[in-house]
Image 1 (cartoon, one colour):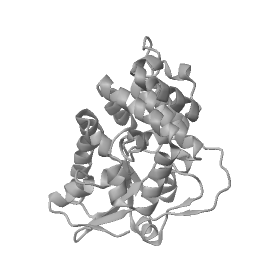
Image 2 (cartoon, rainbow, N blue to C red):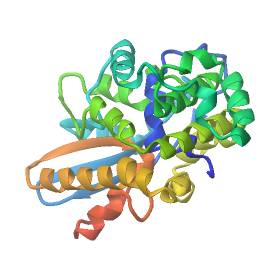
Image 3 (tube, one colour):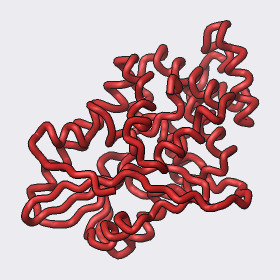
Image 4 (cartoon, helix red, strand yellow):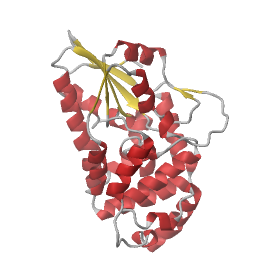
Length: 293
């Protein structure tokens, strides 16, 4: 994209704020999302590129994914499982602040038209965003635009995996609060860039969530990696939301390889593709990471 809001990595967290959508009957979508495996003599770790909110008709549990889920003794997610109400409450605790400029005044005059259209297309009232920090307003518009496509956090990969791993160990690479804090520390200029891009994607749905879903469903590494291109042009965004987190997660996976076991790791697919991905970082450390789906 030249469209930050559809990135599978940084702004995918917005989609976790979605509750159940008003589903319209649609034909099934057969997805083949990417899956990698790294293994040694006594440890196997699968790396699954997830999408955090989906329409209910998407079928993504391919035979290869099913075998990995069945074989694993541990599930590792980006953040611990939580119900939608708890996630929303945690978001609002960080996202709201009194005394902020009205949302319309936080973008340049030339961008106010697209912000107005984006809010209208997403069904978000401007006054509902006025008390939100700029990054949080961007996530809210992105989440609302996803809801328009019947995408729901309830139908996303993580809740399904959590249910599948009932009775087995479930861990997380970071906290939900830590994810929100990464956005909260962004310079205001970067936050405003996110806001404008979220509005533009809401105006152009074919270039937003629909394109994201198509790339993920096809397991297309090049198209998924391209979703991060605009973020690579903003050093603050790239460092805070992608590179630092990928490096931290890669280190956690390396440490986990030192212990026996079979682990299924599911993170936003944008974190697993491209030159600065978790997969690339693991390979740079000498691990043999093979794509198996």
